[in-house]
Length: 263
Ligand code: IPD
Image (cartoon, rainbow, N blue to C red):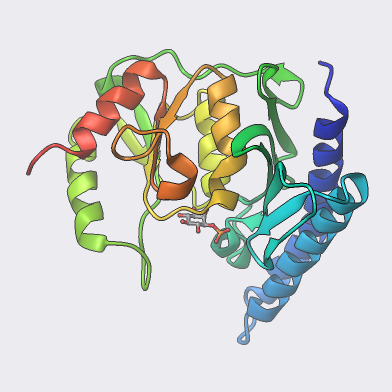
């Protein structure tokens, strides 16, 4: 599998940051059981990871802009390119010692996502995709799942919680979906949810309230694995709308319809 120079830069950045997270995760598992808990330590781990990604990408492409979960926007002189960076997706999992977290990096060119990398260091799983070049898990080419009926499908989702999201609307969506599928899963790391759709582990996924750094890399992975991603209205404005529905062509369409079924 040949990677372009820019994808290599993204992979190096994600793996270096991921190794730093993996070291910190070992410590979190100890702190987790203490009374004070690992909260402050986790924010430091998150910041360390973001600093690593930022410095690696900045060194390779000094003029590109950034949108990062912790620091926010950093404008570069190049008006065409922007990095979308989540240095620690699945922060709550990380905090609780659950090994389901990732570094996610996407590259946007003129508003289109053209490359994405998601790295889960706890499982040593590296997902990569470039527009027109396919999607990969480590060196294995990815295809979305082939199941075409909701009745056979396992669907991932993100569940709103204290202080987050529209709980009432989510319960209506979940009620519609849970009655039609063979299973519903909540991993707690949206980048990995999307990677799981690309890898055919999940047949579909939906969540409302996501940010560009959560979804950028996953969107290109799913599309390059032959899947479909839209907003909740079936439109292409996925990054801006914050809501996302994904799957293969049949499951994505069926899931969209089910989510909107009148009660
Ligand atoms: C969160 C995770 C979670 C999703 C939330 C995200 P973070 O990202 O991806 O699965 O349900 O909407 O904010 O805060 O861990 O980077």
